[in-house]
Each structure stands twice: as structure tokens, then as C-alpha cells.
Image (cartoon, rainbow, N blue to C red; front, side, top):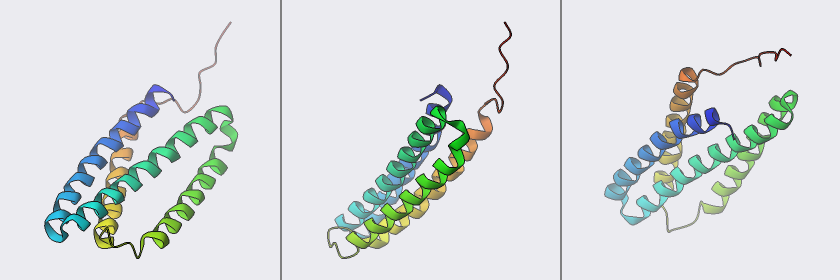
Length: 134
């Protein structure tokens, strides 16, 4: 993973973890331990899936940049399927509050997207590799 990839990941992951913690506190106050667990699981899902997708794109895109769009779409499809399966599997689990999980997923996803865009806008990445003379 290149240095700019790590900076962008940190720029999105840290604020998302903070939001996940805040949602967990609010959910714990509203729903007790079930809310806390649901919110923490939701935050972990968002952070885990976005980091895994980013790492897959960085690794596979570096090896074959012409396939970056199909790789991105395939990664997104796999993430949607896995999240859908996860939701189906945990819908009846009594150890977590599904409303807290849903709020954590929504708020953490929005936070990740905002701060990833912010990190991208501040990053000075070349769109074209300069030609090496000599």
C-alpha cells in the first residue's frame, strides 16, 4: 500500500471510529447493553468493509491499473452481498439492537464518505505518471 493510500485510509477511518463510539454511547444510554453491542458491531462492519475494499483496490489496481473499474465494481458487489447476508443472519439475534446497528451503519457510512472525500481533495496525487527521461 502506498503512502497516500494509508493517509486517505487514516483520514476516513479515525473520524468514523469516533462516530461509531459516539453512536455506541447514545445507543447504550437508549437501549442498554444490546444497543452498545449493536452500535459497535455496525461501526466495525463499516470500517472493516471500507478498509477491506480499499486494500483490495489498492493491491489489485496496482498490479493491473486497466482493470481498476471492474475490480471496484466487483468489490462493491461482494461487499453488498456479504452485508446483505450478515443482515439476514443477525436479524433475530437478541444480543444486539438492530436499530442501533442500522443507525451506526448509516452514520458511519456517511462519515466515512465525507472524510474520504475530504482526504482525497487534500491529497496531491498525480493522475498521470510523469515520463522518466533517460
